[in-house]
Length: 303
Ligand SMILES: [Fe+2]
Image (cartoon, rainbow, N blue to C red):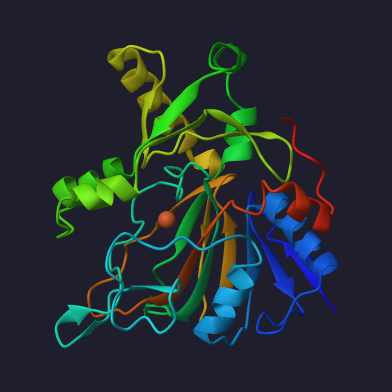
């Protein structure tokens, strides 16, 4: 039997009684979507999945985004990436540094990122403590707690999101060893504009959509005003009261909502303490689609 148990904290719920390697009925999937919007992430413990099964489950949520970097030769299924600090023959088998600063994924796409699906295969431990957690921040709460003056002044604000902002930060500040983006990569990742206060496609409530990783400027403001406003919003939305840490276990599949949350990987483990995840990044190609929304009993979106 399917049970969904909220974590008791400001984000997260555990889903028991579902084998993600099996097809999921539409009414069950509809229930999962509502729980995802409400809780920000869903954890499905004790899963055993092949990459193709992880991909099939992820594609229930939308189309998978292909990366701009050449996939690792250890990828065994297109669209299923590897996050890991494990090296084979002196080379990382996947992205070792992905997501270690606050951000949410794929806001730089015209049809934005909807969910990430991560499958934990190995997690580092030291002295009985599990390391390499993922920290989330609750953007429904952050919007609701904004001062009324900010809510009205920025009610119609539009933000430019640029993939290159985080890429350059990782390259120049974090010395991640990435090469600068090529013109071809820039062509594949042009900036996109989205409302600062986004109506969440599941909850219908507003979320603060001011991605610290990719929010580059606010349309119509001077550079100074835009920089100051984004800096204020970033500091505001990362306050402790909006934050929650998730601790992984092998066999966990976690689906998180990129609209309603921010996240970062906690880099508290060393090069010999291995972490291995398989990941699908899923775009909002279905969640905004009227036919899909009808199929999972979600109301039509306002034009
Ligand atoms: Fe991420």
